[in-house]
Image (cartoon, rainbow, N blue to C red; front, top):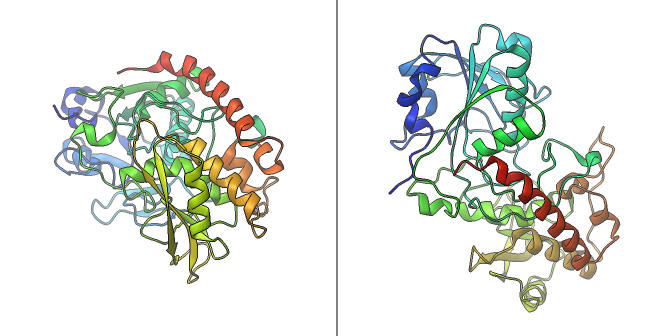
Length: 379
């Protein structure tokens, strides 16, 4: 049986919307089973008052990091308020005349992803304004069982890690909303519209749903897995292959020997993955127009594959074997280098521990989080 998404059950929850002035946070991944956008579903049935645009825009037409300006949506003529740019939080003016805020965006199952923090800002704003926040649930493409990674240190909280959760947290977006609301003290009037037919062991392809890339650099379900491995290279002078057809599946740099790196990574015997030497030329981001040597991660067994462990071993290997390797300096106005926000600590950058010692810390953090997250399971 195919999974029925939260938005596909909207008629069962019509009482939440009828007669209400509705604000909606969504993007192009907000579709029902008939590929009808959540914008059109809610606007045709109940009438929307305002749209709110996360990173990449309400129609998903902007690249990572591009500032989203407030504008008018051409299809609906609705005002669109930016939630990504100089101001990422809701202003009182944006919520004026709104009775409920709805949220429907496909998550990727990674702490690095900004959309669930956009959701948390909405929840906080709803709490302050005394209005209801409604979350339409969607599957975690990585499944809801495995947990992997470390808990962020308080000094490394950022827009790519706003709460003390590991890189791979094993919750749906709706379960994350419950976690944030209850465990981390948001306390808004939260209503979750759950899926039906979903179970925790499902990977995305098991749901019978069609994948729609939620952002430009997450083109496939497979990318959701490699994202948890290689997104940490954002904080280094190694390209994570943005600007190619295989972002996060590839990593590399002009000064990396692709064959040597593939050979040594394969010799480590990491679970569920093989490394293939590869070359790519980014169209934007790092090393535009330069040929990079590196590796492609081929996932052979998703259940065995440990993306966070794999990414750490890859980072440590390149740092030790390539004299050109560097961690990038802090952005203007930031007190820390990007890598600290990627990894949630400073000890990776400082080289305090071996990979095995780091993974021992991560395993304990994962175990601690598993004891917390189970309280918020709804499937």
